[in-house]
Image (cartoon, rainbow, N blue to C red; front, side, top):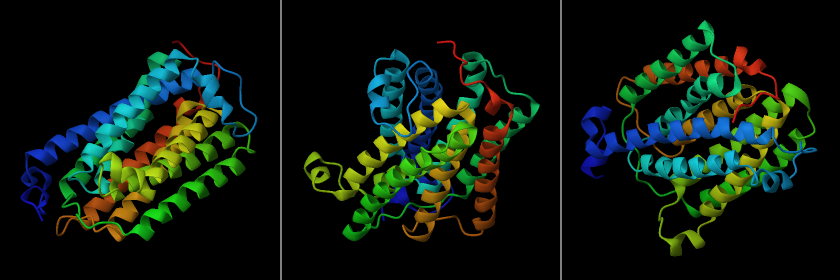
Length: 297
């Protein structure tokens, strides 16, 4: 194992890990802003019946949606950079902070400023991430076997089927269920990005994990856009963030060998729980009752 990946507190891991942590933070900011722009665009086009891929084509006519796509692609590139040295559970937890960014921006953009409970929830997310950062150890360099990468393709297909079924649920409940399914899709993206052993174009063309990442990403984007047409941005975003954080965190620790500093297992669990609690509260708070017609951009 290289010195950069040596186990220990993040501050002692090396400058590369600090850069990668910053990359994850910037990715979270980009994702959070993109979610608001995607919400604005989704409400300016004809609502989809069920889960309709043509919704994405209609959205491409909206400048806000194009900007959201650019921000998401940039955020994903930073996401991949962060996975070089950091445990998957830490990277996904930092990405979960995007829900706080979305909640803060929803005030000026969608007319739903945070109340006191919302501000406490943002603080809970931040504190939980600090604890997780202190508890994180090494990211295992072990390669995911080929059958594991093919399993990710199966996961992407399963998310598509679940999402199609969820598309039959209307209203605020439909927004939450579709958001949850989108989060499962982004979970496949997170695990798949970690599983890809070689990022060279020649290797990516033949790697099933790469196809799982692209397929799950597109499906998740469609499901999230549909969810934003059914309910408030925070109603869709809260469940999405929980799913895309918890599933990869469990996979990383249980199957991929992600490290936690000795004696820090309990604080890591508490930190993850605190960050997710804040994300859920943000998804259920006053911002989640914002009318679907609200927009400013």
